[in-house]
Image 1 (tube, rainbow over the protein chains, first blue to last red):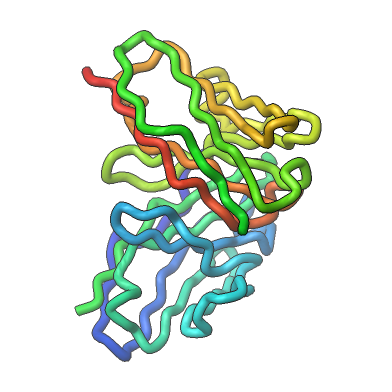
Image 2: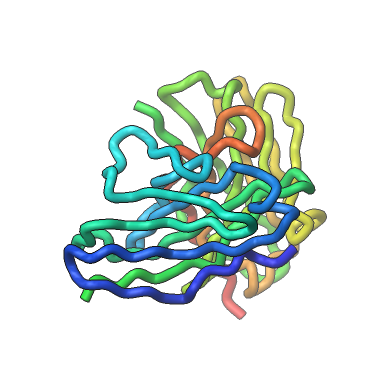
Length: 110
Length: 120
């Protein structure tokens, strides 16, 4: 079971918007709307920022948004801030009743 | 306040076994499942498996099936991850995380992580 595919790195300037893609298959992202995104700052614990493709937990900034098309999910961060610099991971429920993570994307705020 | 508190860092020798604990508080422990997630040094997150603490039903990733054992003691709101015959490749940070019943639900609270070092 291969990991979901994410770009290794993305970057953007403060105030800009960036999008991180997460590509799976018809056995996971394509078949279920159970995609979540996690933010992990260096040396810290992962934090849930998006679930069920596009829902935000209470307390998460509305600058974070999620979407899905076919086998690819996306996380968009608008109005980039220095504090957004972190690693981002997508996950999806799969048709074998397991959870699969993406390889992670390092976001650099220039 | 919801908390998942894990046991402390471990240094083990190759071939030894290890059990990491994860204790929940601030919520109804039996009504949330617990997953374990591995993060090898400088690498990404990997889902290992999960457990329903109410009945100890477990589900494992094929990548970890047979290599780890997850158990629970709901009387003390604890879940355990057991690793046997440790190798250097088991060196990682291990996180527990809770989710509402069924794995479709997100991992909404995480433990602080337990670093495990197995020198080669």
